[in-house]
Amino acid sequence: MRFVLFIFLFISMNGTSQWKNFIISVRGDTLNRVDMNGKKQGPWVIHLEEIRGEPGYDEQGYYVNGLKEGLWQRFSLMGDKIAEEHYRWGNKDGKCDYYNMTGGLIREESWKAVNPADPYDTVDVYDLHDPLKVVDRKVVKLDGFSLKHGTWTYYDPDFGTIIKTEKYWLDKPANSAGNAAANDSDLQLIGFGEKSKPDTVTNNAKAKPKAVLDYEKKNSGKKKIKERDGKTGY
Image (cartoon, rainbow, N blue to C red):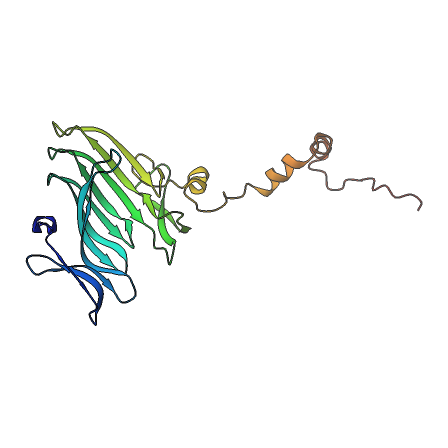
């Protein structure tokens, strides 16, 4: 059952050997624990009153070392569920659902949490013409805390029909299959680093003056080309 149904009749406790602070619900559950290092641990309930026109809410979930972890649920002050979110390392991760006041599903989001201690991940790169074919694996640095990753679905909350869908790959729009495609623009877009370097000959050719290109074209195929190097004398 929801922690918020415990009527919020709590007794604040301090100074135990394990917890710096915590509260006891009317059912005897130990909630809102703060360890001796000042970090939130275990089950928590959060109550926020309406402020400056923003609606208040009740929230429940778990903390691990001061960071939200696993499923968190949010309710209106009338007791209606308005959100279910999943967390990892304190960041949104996986599916998150949002509802209106009558319980109708408004939106399904998909997130990928970034580990603050190790912001690198290995991802598959898919063929541009075959979104099911993996052609490479890349180690990428993920910039941010929670990245849009996967399919986002928007619903008509009254009829339950899908209004639109969006696909993301590491916080950027994805291809039709929801993957990163193995072409230069996509690789740069999702942070795989620099684009693959163009052909050396082509690159050099673009940098050469037109007179040099005409000279090389005129003498192409000849075994020996006599060139003047600017030296004088014998």
